[in-house]
Image (cartoon, helix red, strand yellow):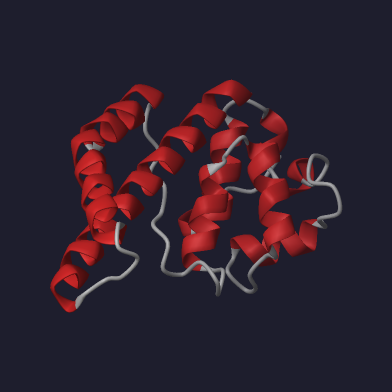
Amino acid sequence: MPKKVTKALLNRYCQARMRAAEYNPDFSSRRGAVEHLSGISEDALKKYELGICNPSNDVVAIMADAYNAPELVSWYCCNECALGRNCSVVEERTPEQALLRLVNVGKDFKSAVDTLSLVLDDGEITEDEAESVSKAKITLLEVYHRVNELLVNLDRIERK
């Protein structure tokens, strides 16, 4: 009989495994999970889930694939990866919600592109134009984030 998860339940990797256990009982224990996690030992999985050490990006990709949890990659990149710490975490949403969020920035996207088109027409950004460019960049980053959010959530339902 598998032990009840306690401290590790606050850990994202353990939470993803427990959600996967709802569909595949093998994931209800670390021992069963490692059968689906090629190259990851039960001891290593325990250390990741207890926060003793952080998994590499390759290991996170394996877990995300096995657990059908693409949001795990986004969370890792935004929270544990040194290169991605300034990224936004992709929230779990229905694809419909993610699509509506993307549609809702459509007007802002068009405005940002129009602004950049006017500013960049002469190949220079003046001091007067710098603030407009900064605002346009923020809008484009928000659009990028929402596209990524939609793709992650679509990927999640395609895997089910």
